Image 1 (tube, rainbow, N blue to C red):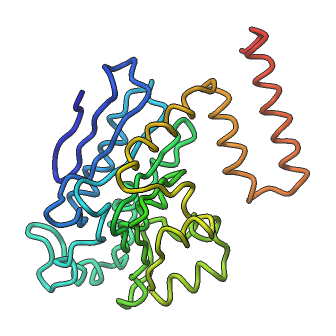
Image 2: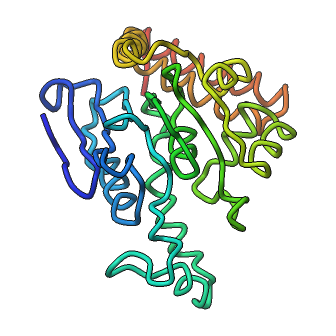
Length: 263
């Protein structure tokens, strides 16, 4: 079932709403290696708003040989995208484009909602904005030919599409800094070794491995998965004793629910 198909983004359900538990968001501009533009970001944000409440897993994938080669190069020209503000226009605004960037970031933030587990299926290039889109997801399954690079700093910019927080959390500050300021390529084997990729498989097995992971996630009771994700996401910002307290509170909610005593 297709819920959205516009501006290089397609949202489909594995089954009929409201019973579907898995949704797939596909970057559907293979001719441009799924290069991203402002319209695609608006469509990605809309995909998040259109998800039925029963969806538990969102798979993010790209058509063709590349997951996403990053931001469309037209963004770096003086004229930018037709009908859209250019980077020069954004820079000239009183807020230096802050409001526009916040809107762009909405395309990336909803993948980390506590009521969802998001899985990026990455093949070929995941460069710049493509890398950050893969980082927006909770989990990453990579084909052996996957290549990541954070090229923004090399262009005189910074990664501003929500990628810095998860990158530091996954690989640590020093390695994240080196990855960003050098702009170098990380291949799939290194990505797996440093904790960036959860699983690396032959390219022919990427879809099957992603389906298997989605099935494993949906096998556990939904409320327990939601509570566990919330616990783990908040762990870095809590002290040890605060995390202990959060665990007790979450377990109390689960026990009351299982006993039929939930409010």
